[in-house]
Length: 95
Image 1: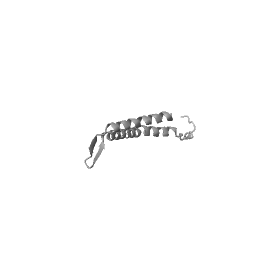
Image 2: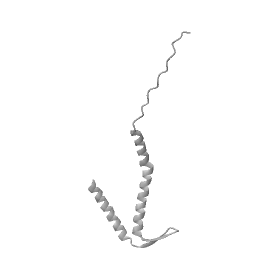
Image 3: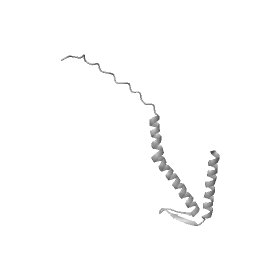
Image 4: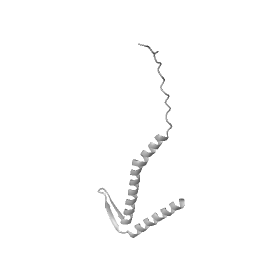
């Protein structure tokens, strides 16, 4: 499994290098208060990374954390509640 992860990592690293090297045109990103001069390859890779991180964070916050909390509550030992003590009954009276 570790070898497979390493191969996937190398494949994505190679794809990133190819994208970065093929897209060398300079662009200016204007954020209103600041401008960043970069290449299109770097801009594409950074935007992909930001999308992965934001998507992973949203999935973590909306799915994983609530399921972990539910699992934690379910695996907690149930509190033992003693049965209620029976109140003494008055003797039976005929009417």
